[in-house]
Amino acid sequence: MNIKLYGDWIIASCILMLTIFGLFFLYSASEGSFDIVLKQAVFVIIGFALFFSLAQIDPEHFRRLAYILLAGSFILMLITALFGPEINGAQRWIRVLGISFQSSELFKVSLPLSMATYLQYKKLPISMKDTFFCLFIIGISALTVAIQPDLGTSLLVALSGLFVLFLAGLSWSFIGITFGILIIASPFIWNNLLRPFQKERILTLFNPESDPFGSGWNIIQSRIAIGSGGISGKGYGEGSQTHFNFLPETQTDFIFAVAAEEFGFIGVVVILSLFLILSLRTLYFALNARDRFCRLVVGGLLLTFLFNLLVNISMVIGLIPVVGMPLPFISKGGSSMITLFILFGIIMSIGSHKTLMQR
Image (cartoon, rainbow, N blue to C red; front, side, top):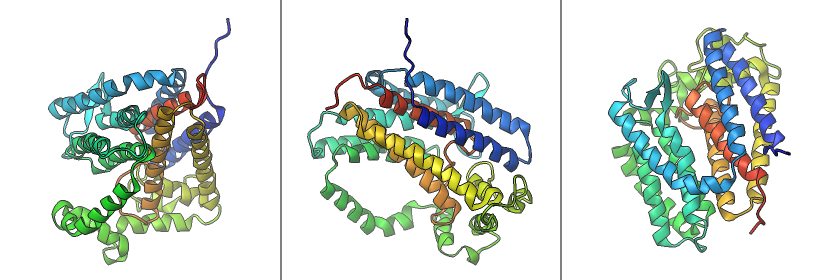
């Protein structure tokens, strides 16, 4: 009896190399802590198990479970609000058998799947009724995350749904009107919705030297770390900004700067090349998906992944304010790591199951 295993060696190889690099960088950033690296390695192993398991499932099952997963996401958020521990003034985590998991991560899977399921048979361009219904669901999902509070994840959740809506055929006139409204409303947003620390981060972006030992510290030290790496870097474990505690959040938000300082331009090119190959392969799957649902899911997940990646790198090099998004597959964090493996498991399932004719 022949058992066919579904998968894609290009995607699997890129993810494997990225996670291995991540463990090496994490060991250096954590000052040689085996405990931290071992814990992250456990999440990587669990992630790969989920990754290959999901790849064996026909995409039709994801379509059938989409709305159930979305309902489960809201229920999980309610459980977190009622019983989750408060850490640093936020309720974002739930504990199961001694393992903590960030409950909002499930939205990154369930929301794009649900949007693709709802929009797969809608005529182009998407009607105003369907557009506003999708925006309502996306808004409620993002708001549920934002009140934890977790603005970074809520933005990513909102975009994971908006990307699918855009790919499904959102009217360009609607997009233009929306951007116009946002521009007109920007003074109101600045004066009434942004918190003082958020305003400070935006202002610091344009002139970090105005407060070099306060709000500008993170960006300044990150730029120094990246610039001092040169072509080939200072060597593994030899980054002065990292190991003399000048660079903040070296294990999470700014681990890209650690890699740049210790491995230089060459190391950065290798990392970005792996991300590029992974993204191009995923784009190929989106363009050659077997139906509209699959195209919307893969396209939406790809854009969400790219947005996460670009935000982290842009934040580290000082192009945008610090918003607290990890570098995919490399930064420390079990919840985000597992979610990424799930997303690419779904992508690999869609890419390798082509038993139906394209339409």
